[in-house]
Structures are given as structure tokens and as C-alpha cells.
Length: 427
Image 1: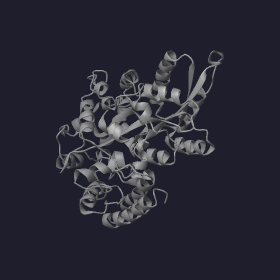
Image 2: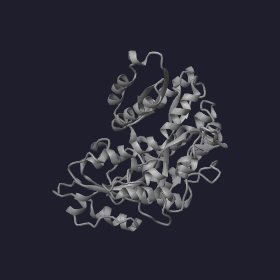
Image 3: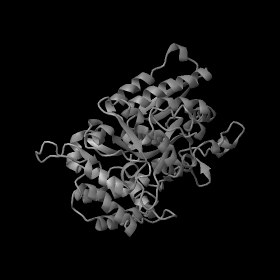
Image 4: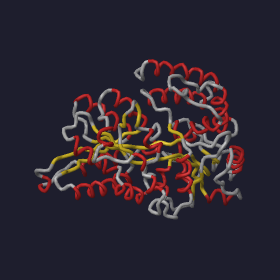
């Protein structure tokens, strides 16, 4: 994800799941079928199945067919369905793509639905979760969840090397010192056995944008029509961040990181990792060490990226009223409470996120996620967001590989991004 690539599931598992949800039965004969498209982890698939059954029990004349796919497959499949005029009625959306689909007239403007007698109260949701989907004076999705980024840390490694656990008000300096103290070649063979942190260029949301913001920099200007990532504050922050790999060696480089699988934190050889709040469920499966989470370290500012998922309605749906009923259910308190129990996301509804259902006392870091959401910032979502994010990522990769200095790379990135913005995201 882009922002959400940490929610990517194994393709084989997801493809196998399609067969489970695509089959009807004699009991479904005569029911109105509503198709619902989404991506997700295996854990989310199981949880969603149960929640959809709840909706169907409340609407006995409706059958929901859930169409799952991996993150990359999802968007390719959706594009093909849109082109053929046969997309699902309800579509899970994120900020990375919402502008593009809405601009092409492929989504329903939900203002009338949300504000009608059968509507929703947007004030019930985190402001950021609404901001992601509200633009051009219209609401394009019903908020489902609201997530942010924190630092997960391996308590066993901190204990092993006698390093105090990070505190919620820690700074870049604190973080830097801990990352150094937690990087070790235990057997003296010249190869690092445990790293302090994983500094990656892969995801703007998960990995690097917070460092830019906390240093007072930005990616786009306030009107979101010009890239400013080559300005001093942004470059300085990214030089600090890349230096964790290139200078300080407290993070594996690109080649080293590729040997640890899809998530290095799970191996027990990484002391700290920037991850989304949606990773709680996955990390709860760890049995080999204890862990927790704290807010991102602060610098000139204390700010974290905030993003969310929402459910949109396909503009060519033949069942818009029922699609609205499903989208509304997916943002309802009842659904939100069940979502909170799964641990796969922070519920977008504030009252649920701050209730004992989500704050279950099993993990101190959950309360820090909620604090980070309140002071967080939504990314600069625009037309062509995923294109220009990829352009920046490509330039950052050249820095990580030692082929460009940061200033040159960000100058080139800014030119690419400006071209994409000027072309309305189509370049």
C-alpha cells in the first residue's frame, strides 16, 4: 500500500477464499444479491464472513456475495470490472484511489444518502476518517476504520541488551540512541544478528512521511498542486532516515531486508518497526517474544499519518438502496463493535474506539494509537496519488542503493510529481 501494502495477504490464501464466498445455495434462491468487493488479510477474511452473516440475518431477502482479492489483484480486477460496467455494488476504498474513481464518475455521491432520513452522523466518526473520503463538497464512502502508525518494539531484545523501553514522549534523539544500542553482531562473524530498526522506502504512509512532517517538511503544498519534497526540511528528514541504513547501519539495507520475508519483526531479529495499527491482530500470534507499541518519536512536531478505509457504492449498481444499507451497516456501531473485537483495525467510530471493546487492556499501545489519531494528519491524497507516490518511491530506492544523493533524488522526484499533478494524475 502504498499505505496499505502491509495489509496485503498471501495471494494463494485469498484466491482460495473466493470459492468459499462465491457459491450460493437453494436457500438463497429468490434473494437479491449484493456484491461486495474488498481486500484483506486472512484474519480479516474470517472476521468479515461472520459480520456479513449478521447483516444477512437482519435482511433475510438479501444475499451478500463477497469478492476478495489480494491488494494488487484487487485494483486490477476492479479496473477491468469498471471498464466492463460490471463492478460490485459496494466497494472497499482507501484514500490512495478514491479521487480517481470518483472523478471518473464510477462512484455514487453519498451526500443525499448520508444526510437523509436513513442517513448517518458523520460527527460520530474520527474527523480524519471522514476527511479521507470527503472532497469536492461530496462524501464518497462511509468510514469503516481509522488507522495510524506507531513503533512496535520487541521487549525481549530490549531486555537482552539492557535498553530501557521507549516512552510515549520520546524524541528522535532517544530513538536514534536506542536503535544503535539494539544493533548487534552477537557472534562476531561480521554479520548483524539483530537490528535496531527497519528504515524502508517502500510505503509513504508506514515508513517515511511521518519523519518529513515531524521535521516541519511536506510532500505537497497546501493546495496540493506542487511537490515540495525537495525543500530543506523534507530533505533533511529523509537524510536522517536513510542514514539509519547508509551511515549508522542500524537498519538492514535493501538486499539484507529481502532475506527476512514479508515482515522482519516477526522473525524476532528486529527491535523496532514502524507498522500500522492494523497489525495488532497479526502480531498477537507471536509466541516467541513479548512486544508492545508506542507513538512515533517526536521532533519539531509530533504528528502521525492517519488513514482509513470506507465503503463506496458503484455508480452503475442496480441496487443502490440496498447497497447503501450494506455500506451503512459496515459503518454502524454494531459492525464497529464487532470489528473492534477482531483487533484487525481501529474502528472509525470514536465511541467504539474509546470503549473497553477496543481498549481491552491486553496491550498498552492501543491507547497511544487513539492519541496519535487525534493529532494525526491525513496524507496528501489527490488524483493519481498512487502514481506520484510510486515516483517518489523510485527515487528513494536509488538513494538506498547508493546511486543518488538525497537532494538530487528529491529534485528529480519533485519534477516527476509536478508533471503527474499537472496532468490530472494521468501522466
